[in-house]
Image (cartoon, rainbow, N blue to C red; front, side):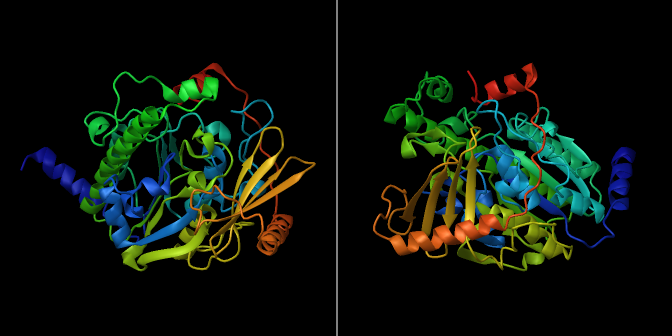
Length: 431
């Protein structure tokens, strides 16, 4: 053994944990819909390592994101609040404008940092996880640069865990690869059938024309999306192996989820950030609790606003102030997803425990309701026009829930600049 190797081993040994509290690892797979993970029954083996995580913890089959795009759903994940309560959602000034999270809203990172956790975030979505949106509140380290593709992100996280993270640590990751434009790296681009050579930027063309691609082009998009999932799964596996090697895995609290899904022709749409259709807000949620204290499958609907309260309760820390989220093992009542339009209108999906989802759209003057039964209509194509009693019950429950929400001031709307526009262009949001 060389002197240099011995010194390194002694340094690592000197950093062994004396604090028994669990590490917290939260991984958001950007733009990943639940029904494309093999852990959720998808026929393609897209996520073998995440499948293994599900066998070690709890798989929540009916997890619903509180929003349909990055800023608002991450704000909900970090605060335990639905968008109407935290105020970070679309703002006047264009489809890509968003208000920042107000500094008065307490975040999970702030609570964990104050309790002694090292806090670090590695967010590959530079456009909408930019610090200007205040989602960095509470993180000692907050990195967004050069974390795409996922291998770069995994390298940085592994380096942080190996050399910088003290015990306990809260590490947040946003993995961007499944996000549009769909272009899996080799050899993942040909892992699943459907790839067509010579296909351009499908998302940019759709954004310009509003016309869905032909079926074979959509099949190409799905093949690349699924390949990107498998690539991300392999990179997440590298991070998990580092936690095992460092002796941090067994006691860790590990969460894998997504901020929203992606539409591939459902409801005539491609992409995300639109109305809260089920295919868009139904996201994966898998939690490995410390020491595998909870295991199994949960079929009841839960929300991403329940994640932060569950983490804090597991760690024995006080809840976040004004959070609507409950612990994942105490969830009851409606689960809601929201999309706030820049014009001021709001679309909501409200889920009950019987498989119904109430779709509500308001524009300040009119309110439109539609009820769906996901047990018989999983594609959400046939509203139950005759079921007036269930519609009215859910509408009343939803109005009562909204009336009780604490509402934070809306944060500032960051002024667009050339660098931000270029990041949006790279993600396919602008032409």
